[in-house]
Length: 202
Image 1 (cartoon, one colour):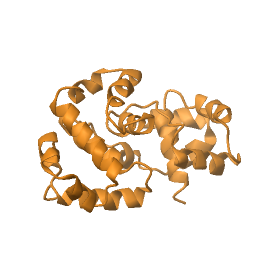
Image 2 (spheres, one colour):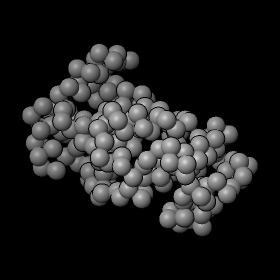
Image 3 (cartoon, rainbow, N blue to C red):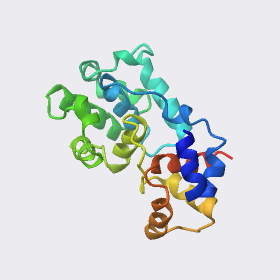
């Protein structure tokens, strides 16, 4: 982590000042093994277009379907539940269909999750977006927090845009302005993103 802090100290002092007070292990954590990728994608779908707090609350209810044991979350068990059962724990009808489609495609070997860690960022996104309801944002969150890729930034994340506004004092930043800022972060854009999210907690 010293290498990352040193990079931001010289390239972007505003981000450095935030990151030096952040326990990055709480954000990134250790390696996620391939057998946990399915669970991570389910959680990613649950969290789409929700605040962190709301996503956590619904995911907790979702877990109750599996006796609060994440190891029970697998395609076979997902497909045993009726759509209404999934809806009853707080998922929208759209998200019910997304999670069912994920389970079906994994079970039918239409997508291959276990090999995702071997692929480039672009190829991971191509594979994941074969699944209904998984777009660029969900793929980018998966790349950041599951595959632990260090150089990811999501232009589709509203929180990151709000963080840019707050940290840099730029009202309604354009894609061009954001690109100019995050160019300085390479090859650690993921950690710059973490700093922006963290800035919104204060």
